[in-house]
Image (cartoon, rainbow, N blue to C red; front, side, top):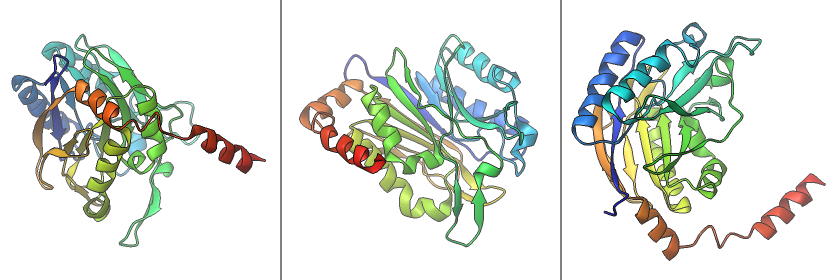
Amino acid sequence: MSDRGFRIGLVQLNTGTDPVQAREQAEGLIREAKEKGAALVILPEHADVIVRREKEYGYPVPGPVSHWYSSLAKELGIYLHCGSLTEENPDDEKGRPYNTSLLFSPEGEILASYRKLHLFDVTLPDGNGVRESAGSSPGREIVVAKTELCTLGMSICYDLRFPELFRLQALEGAELLVVSANFTAATGCANWESLLRARAIENSCYVAAVNQCGEKPFFKAWGHTMLIDPWGTVVGELDGESPGLLMGTIDPELVQRTRRKLPLQENRRTDIYLLKREGEQR
């Protein structure tokens, strides 16, 4: 490991409808990660609460929920990625909140805020339909956060299926791609690992994919939180059933060595891509 390497803690949760219990579960594993040397700790999507009616749980940012994360990051002296929380959106006519990821510094400051871009409006394999846009507002910004540890790209769950997002993050310098998720068991068994490894390989990045587990209001979550290296190797994985902590090491120098061996960014044919796009717009 190079001098820039650092320890990371991925916290898999079984978040339910009680915000107090959710915080207690998360806090115990965050503190364990710190004790084991983590400089960066990452939580899954909806780490604050999972309910049927998200509109009832929208909070301002900064506000009481973000303050709790901020205080914990400052106390422990770590970078803390909250997974995602439900952020109120007073500008939405339907009262739909944002699904928002926040990254906190060791001083407790909000370094980056990302609102989920791609909303899960689909029919699941079991025939049940899900329209995330009925309860959430979409974000409008790609977010890459630069820290003293590394540069990381932020994404949430369904974003994983859109490779353009991750390529743009890599082009902006991302070395670690963070996927905080509440991925379903119905699709996770078929697609979760394949998609994660593809995002790592095609961008020569680490991927930290932190998922929910357990029964949720609409489905069972897949679990299987993973850490994947820039070659696409799964270097750590949790099971699909239980909350837990996955520790690993991020070595930004390995990202650079991988990119020198396989210069994917330099070999892209942007001249052809742009011509194709211009033709479609005519």
